[in-house]
Amino acid sequence: MFANGFEASDEPPSARTCHSCCKLDENTLAVYGGKTSADKEELADDTLHILMLDQLNKGSWGVVDITPQSATPGKRFGHSTVFMDKYLVVFAGQNESTFLNDIWLLDMSGPIFSWMCMPEENSPSPRAFHSTVLCEDGNSKG
Image (cartoon, rainbow, N blue to C red):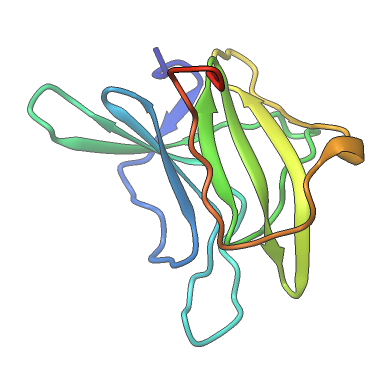
């Protein structure tokens, strides 16, 4: 499902901490944001990295080719991501010293990938180092 629109690199993302990682399908993970150094305040770039596993569980890394004119969630850490329907959702976190409460969506069905920022009028208060889980059963089904 996710092979189209990805640029294969076989180079994993740089070492990082405080990033997010979420499952896109049975064989695909997305890694976004974080810090590249635990003792420095260097933030990772805002490239969306993809790990695709084949039937032998051998991994292949790639990046999502975002439309050049598209705004992005930007460099951040302590945020959360979840995959819902066809959207990768990035929520909140921190950039440098500012806590965030923004919500960004990326339609992963392609072939064009561009981030959309949701209006903040109903967003929760700013936060970082939280978690997000998609409820798949019951009254709160997402």
